[in-house]
Image 1: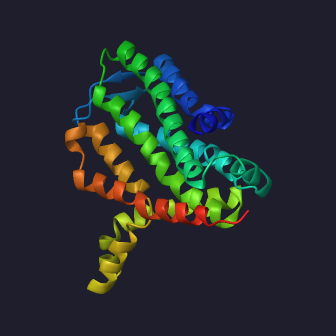
Image 2: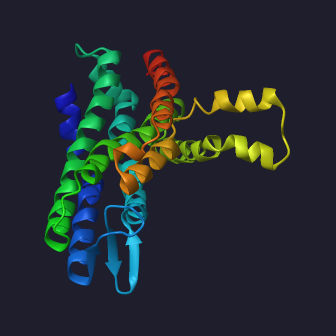
Length: 261
């Protein structure tokens, strides 16, 4: 089942833009920019004219395009599989709903890792030629955390696809709800700023912060790793980010098992 899903996702031309973005960026930097060491402690900076941009800042902007491509492209297969005619046909075969659900997640992660590797390749060539460097931790950050960041959105989108039976609604609601993770990540400061000091409310919000896959936490981990390597990563923040996957994944799985087609 995983192989079938992988082949289906690979046919989605929208997702081809993911490694394409990195190829175009590497080519543009090679012809019109450059690479140099950073005085602020990051491994290097990108130079465009008189502007010197930290690697983390540049990668954050590129990552936003990757996330957009993922939100549009990845849910397409799962949305089509929820159509009554196709679902009835697929589930009439010796395939359990559990197998389909987890195979879909596994295929999505596999394709994400493959495209992340294809994205690392042109960056490695660029940094090797322009800067004479091979920042392994920078590349590992791309390879490990880009798929994880996309998975935060995908898990939420899958839930809303199951609830709404609409590809557009699922993608839009998944993007919006996952975006709220940035608010919950700083909820203590927000509540204090607006004058809410109730411990009950603070505790409630802390609990709610675990219910949405935290794309904001993953992004903060990536920024820290780009700037200072893996030693700069906040382990508790990473653990929190991983824990936030569980509630929505479990709820999506339960709803899919009980969904009528």
